[in-house]
Amino acid sequence: MVTLLNELKDVKILLGKDQALAAISKTKSDVLAGSLKDCGRDGSCFINRMKFTTEEINAVSERLSTLYAPGNALDILVKKHLLPSGTYILYNELPAKEMLVKAWQQDAGAINRAIDIYAGGHKPNYPLIDSISFNTRDAVNRDNYRASYVSFLYNTANVVLVESQSSPAFYALPLTAALLSIEMNERNQAADYEPMEKGQNKAAYEQVRKTNWNNYKYSVILIPGAGPDEPAVALSAEGMLRCRLAANQYKQGLAPFLMPSGGCVHPYKTKFNEAIEMKKYLMETLGVPEHAIIIEPHARHTTTNMRNGVRLMFRYGMPMSKPGLTTTTRGQSTMIGSTLIDRCQKEINVVPYKNGNRLGETSIEFYPMIAALQLDWDEPMDP
Image (cartoon, rainbow, N blue to C red; front, side, top):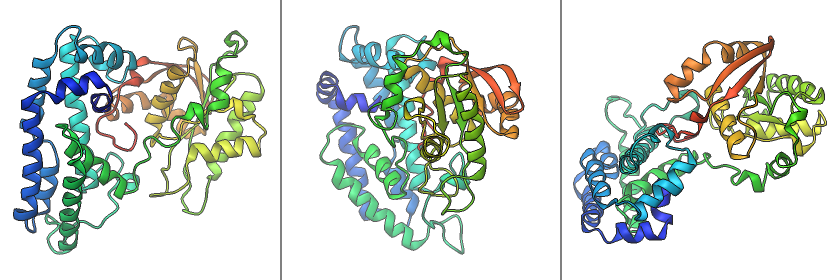
């Protein structure tokens, strides 16, 4: 939603005129400027002053509620943008004003979460692959930040202060801090290859509109990625096996599309993208045409392989009433058909699919669920 606050002209005008929001922005800037003088060797001081406080989040919530009116710019934001997007679908049954506030509070939490992980060094959802890039803690007292890292935080706060001055928006400073922290950790991959329908997925996206779905039992064959153990290896042997299993089913005519799924995941900070490398293998080695391959290059776990796959099915106009098929190696397929739904609810707060029939040890049907569109606020790498 914060992106819309910045991009919709009428919303920017409405919020820009509000003196209470302007005061929040000025206070935020003044407080961070003060940190350069009085935080000293306290690293947490710099981090906390870049984040939204609970009081600020509540104050903005109150102002959005007050400024909202039926038919005005904020009402249009909800009804023509938030609701159709599905990205806040868990709040769809709320009145528009309450949905607006819930979306703001979720986004504010997401900004703070990114700062906590990629400036504060807090543990992310998947620490082995997504942790902060820096050695942040003092060697003697692990409760304290290293002196050199505190100096780094001072300089970070200074840059955030300078760069956020170009925008008077109440959210500008924490958002700048979050984006800078993600960038400095080389973790700005959440939008890699976007807009995919104009790039990596262009041929397949256009093919979707030509497809006679009655000719196929399944809409898509989803292939979860399997990252290699070695940094120099682009595609793991298990990833190759999964591609071969799925390509065989594609050539049998079970579905018109394959969807290799996975981001830059294993090993830590790898430069190889699982979906991209699987696409290359499918095309160059197995002879699958590009128009039959939809990449999903952002997932970081099997939970988000499923969720993100469903999102692309919806966004690209594939029939949501038609089952898809997941094809992978035996252990992962067993998990998808047994425990993964519970993990989805626990780890990403939605259930993006329901299981259908099992075709064998390596393939099981799935039915897409619209709840997959909901953003995951606590996952900066793949919300």
